Image 1 (tube, one colour):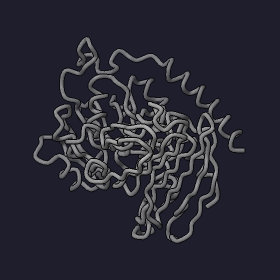
Image 2 (cartoon, rainbow, N blue to C red; image 1 turned 120 degrees about the vertical axis):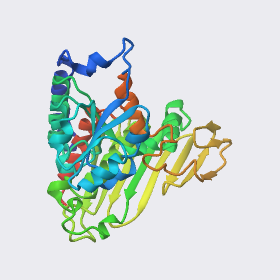
Image 3 (tube, one colour; image 1 turned 90 degrees about the horizontal axis):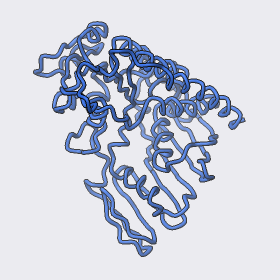
Length: 378
């Protein structure tokens, strides 16, 4: 049943991608009047922040401090958050998205609740802006397709922010897979769970299935779906499991989900999300070595060959080594001293025309797996 469902999704995806690839760019696409011959924008990217509170507080400062950015407007339903976001700059601070998108700009950074992502992304695209959206791109694949099918018709681009890509440990894992250090990948385990649901009120947007798109899986699952495929360099081909509401009766949807699946080539993986217990693990097991990253703070490595990464150096010889400290810890969002910081990376993509680290087209395909799991009873 899972495979039949995904076959239909893949056929629908092929039709959509044909449309995306064939759509012509209009004469004003990519701000051609502001781009040098080699494709690099010859001035800072003019940015509008759509949503400035909540998680955006962690990274909104990038758009004031990064030399590739010029913040021109910020909007939030709480105007105080918009004022805090613009600081002492001359950018517009407003509670009106219409006013914010009316300012001459190049890109919109969208950090609003999930149920507003499609509406706000489409509004920004129609205003002539490229879009960078806090994950997930949308609540479901249908909404995601509406965004990425409209973007090329308007000559615009869509990227998605994944803070896991800020972390050098995950880049080291990906490079180790690509180099063959693990040997044949046999199994991958990922868990992302926290106890935030114990504190959320019943009227929080995260507690609403309609607004969030589901439960813990809807908000945390996108991290894991993306990460397992990005690190392993292989697509998911099957996924199944269960969702349950065990400890949070005031939360709609699941407060825990446990999934198993298969990657291209036959490797197996496990995923857990949760809002009522705490667990954070990314582990890769291969025929020649393994790594386990726990609590965003400790990495254990064992393998036959030495390995040098951004975050650690391992001597090999099948010895177990444990690494911790600042180089291993998950970097803070918006840390401009981190060369992997994804908002800076998005500004580079917008300035040069290179791909976003997580393209909207890739995010839409991943939303098909999100939808599949959300169809399971909870």
